[in-house]
Length: 217
Image 1 (cartoon, rainbow, N blue to C red):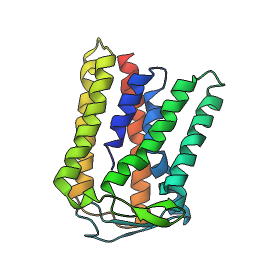
Image 2 (spheres, rainbow, N blue to C red):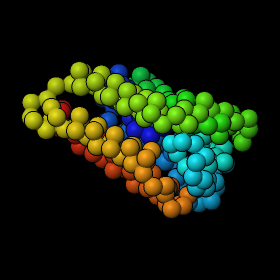
Image 3 (cartoon, one colour):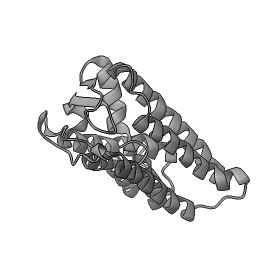
Image 4 (cartoon, one colour):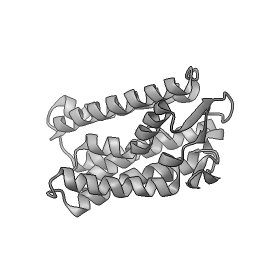
């Protein structure tokens, strides 16, 4: 899953408005942020295999440090601690818990769409329901989760300016366009190219989300 993860960001923001939206945008993609970095460092492995699923050409054959269930839980615990520490223990337990759950939600949503390449412990056994083999339902799920979370967010905030009212929905449409390119466009040139593109996308989306969120404040 890609843009659907951000639906959790919007829903969590409604749960505690003190959490910066850009923080939640990074939290829901934290496993993939480190995946991208670890692929570039050679610690985790992927390769481009067109047709390995109908929606995604990445063969994610070794990613125990970021996408095993145990690793996801540990990253979530780390995110909870980091949020409390960075906020000088001024951040509430509730806010830190929502950030941790946002991190863990990545594995849960990935479990729905990935083929069996998500390890439970270390590199095995591997699980995944494989919705990526059905592009139309997988794409629809991304849209439903993204805009479902966004609707909760928009209903809990108010905006006076035109940008504040319409900026986030337009941003959402832009994210769906990017998702369509991921699903139906040309595959990346290499695993490193995929990792770099992912890291750039996550940073850009978080920056835009944070800026638009401030326009609604």
